[in-house]
Amino acid sequence: MKRKLVVGNWKMNGDLVRNQALLEQLVRHELAAVERAVCVPFPYLAQAQAALAGTPVALGAQNLCEFDDGAFTGEVSARMLREFGCRYVIVGHSERRSLFGEDDAMVARKTAKALAAGLIPIVCVGESLAEREAGQVEAVLQRQLDALRTELTPAALAELVIAYEPVWAIGTGRAASPEQVQAVLAFIRAWLGEHGGAVRILYGGSVKPDTARELFSLPDADGGLIGGASLVAGQFIEICEAGASASHSA
Ligand code: PEP
Image (cartoon, rainbow, N blue to C red):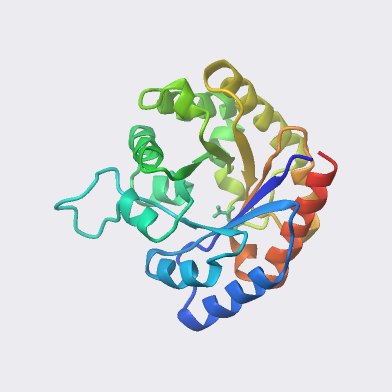
């Protein structure tokens, strides 16, 4: 059995009371056949670290600074994330790329920093709708992936998790079709085979309980990155269950 990985991305949502209820429900639900993680906003890392301690649900963050420490007001370093028990960090989410000006080179530098600190980066890649309609999906993915090679050795590349998140599917309720997803995952798998090695590849973009099982069972899918549905305990648990059953048939 190859265990799937299901990661929740809370984005900028939550409060102390709701987080506690959500985290308690997640850890109460035992699911050995799937790896689970939640990536929470920075101010809630301590709360989530305490709630997840000693449980199989791992902790992650949603971003990190490309520098180690110093005069970078408002930034959070990889070392700080490690201090709060983070195992994962999302890097280069499309919202960071489009709203906060993160380019491929910065994403690569952040990825290297995360790895150097012992974090597992979940590097997000994916095309916009305009790029898909212009037939540029592979070119965009190739550019985003090639940028990682400027900062990472093949051995380092093999440590990553890659999340394929088509921008047009994020938060829109319109998940990519299984055929569209598999085609891109296979492209990423081939690129990794050439340059890095075996890496877990996730799909993200409007995954819901009713679509998760099919998406996670695709030949090149190792799990999913879940936004909106990770904020609703029942939905996230159902998606994790879909991951567990896809693990059994992998
Ligand atoms: C995301 O933000 O990474 C994501 C996949 O969001 P959603 O599931 O809401 O589309």
